[in-house]
Length: 129
Image 1 (spheres, rainbow, N blue to C red):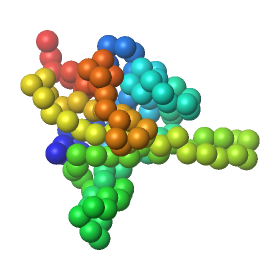
Image 2: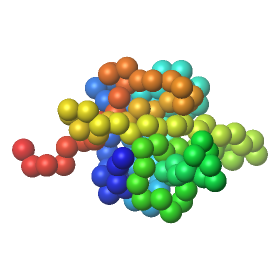
Image 3: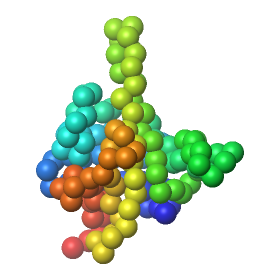
C-alpha cells in the first residue's frame, strides 16, 4: 500500500515513459507506449485524472475514490476528442508494488496484464546526490 504523498511525483522507466502524478489528482504522461506497449491512444497525456481504488459494498468490488489517500491500485482516466465533439476514454489501471528497489508502478489496460521489468515505472530520485 502506498500513501498519496509517496505516489505524488515524477515516475519513469529506462525505455522513455515519463509520468507525473500530482496531489490535485491530475496526471500527465509522455512516451506511455514504453510502459504499456499495446496502448492505442495518444502516447502523451496532458489532462489525465487519477484516483485510488477503494473497497465498495462487497469485498470483490473496487471503486475509484476522489477522497482516498492510500491504495495499491489506482485508475487513470483520460478523455480525448472533446475538441471535435467526439469523446472516448483512454483509461489505464495502475498497480503499485514494492520490491528491493522501492515502489514501482505497473500501468495496464487490462487488470489481468502484468509488466516486464523494462515497463515498470520507478519514482525519480529527489534526494541530493
